[in-house]
Length: 180
Image (cartoon, rainbow, N blue to C red):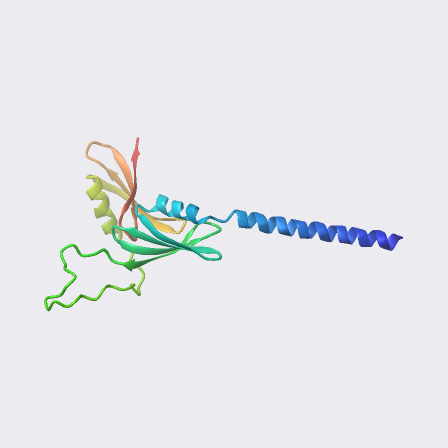
């Protein structure tokens, strides 16, 4: 009789362990981003248009159109972090035709082999000064959720101060924060 009691206890503990494992697995699946949530996260970070979203097991492949061209982003499905960002197309040249002088079609530009280059600190300063004239007080390079950017602090001639956030790959102004 004592042996039956231990067998029942062991079976009970095993069933509890299985139920706990299933619940943990279900909760981790539920915490993963949906495709629309992933697109919304990208739209919050970049001022562009999401062209397509491809769902994979643990990641999303999102194609994004920005002023600087077309980019492919790999987004982690669980954390929502951007793992990679690769430029696939440059923006079209406004003053070039699709035909060459001989009348032949110019070859279309294919995907670029190299990842996009990061802008320099000086380029970030120039972009920020185009937005707000003044004296640059400080420049910091930051990374957050897989996105890198420069924070350029500028003091305007009227003594107002602003921090301008410049994306380190696209050169787009992500935000302007006015200091009191």
